[in-house]
Length: 496
Image (tube, rainbow, N blue to C red; front, side, top):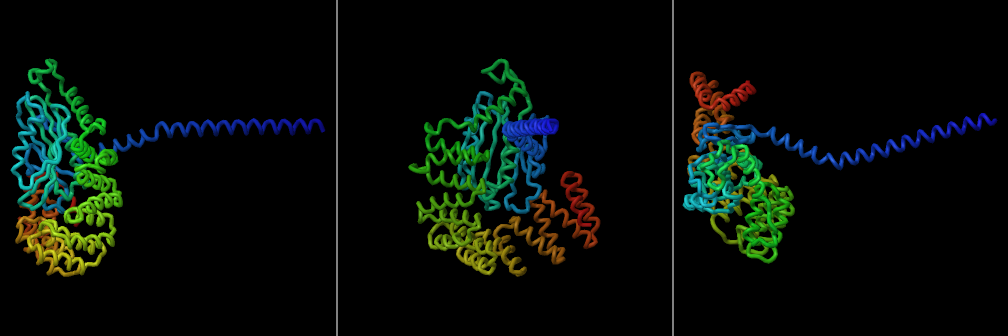
């Protein structure tokens, strides 16, 4: 009996020890796991993001001119964009004004600081149609970023431009990208901005070119200085001591860096009682669009429109934000109010475009067409109304109507890329190869790097038994644009 009790006691003791051991193990593992998560999770995510970011960029070095740049993989090198080297989108079929990132180098006086140089550059820009300097952000005497808008007379587009300047001795390097204003917040614009910021000067600055420092730094040290200055350019001083104009400039810099939340926090300091509140709310709306928070973006634009009820431009901005948010019901109500206002030809055309776009988004194609046609009747010279009417005609199955609208657009602008592309595709699908060939050749005259034109021209020449022309097309491409040639050959092999 005593033996059995002792046996039970030993069993209970053994199980208790095992339970305590397991309990402590779990506590230790849980605390260790929690600590590991709290300590390492965020850095691991950042490392992965940094690795992915590096993977998306290709390196271009130019030892003759003394610089290098990492450009986004969505861009391709282009010899036709000016400067030392240019980069354009690999697929530029959606643009009338073809976006480009161009690297240039200029001789400057070594004693000039960057602001003096940009003031001279601005004198040349001031002659452009509808020119507007948005901001200049300087980080010391060697680095600056200028943001501009102007009108391109050949494409009738409003152009958004960002120029990154870096100076070394007597050399000024410029990485400037231009994009249609309507694409200023697009992924392509962000890729171009990041690429421009990755410009690095590799030529050493000679000691006699730096009077303030006889022991001038070599290229590695120079790059570190530039990196520090680049960071400094977005370090915001105490907002309470900043004027509204300074807040706007710094907010635009933050927006260009996609630091939208910081920009919003800064801008809200001047939205209450300031003459700059309209521009601040416009930028706040832009930030929310960047954050894909379309409801708050609409609220920002609504505030502007409500404060200026007779201003058609602001009402159009509000309507456009509702369309982006796919709030078609409210967009339609506000658009009807917009059409009762008076404004410039451009703003009136935008009101009709918005109305058509609302119906297009709702898939009410007949009403969309009526809206665009009503706009064309009042503003017949607006090429965007013609373009959208043509797109809607295709959705309605009215190919002849689409051709008519696109041809009318080409009568307004013979280099209107959208019309040439759409007509080329229509005629290609109809097997009207002579007409398709004409429009694809026109496309290549406008954009020599347009891949689809090479692919379909080659197929047209083969289908019409013009093999020598097909071979000539590919040979010329191979000799002048080897990277594009390789891409074309991949596409042709997929079609076989």
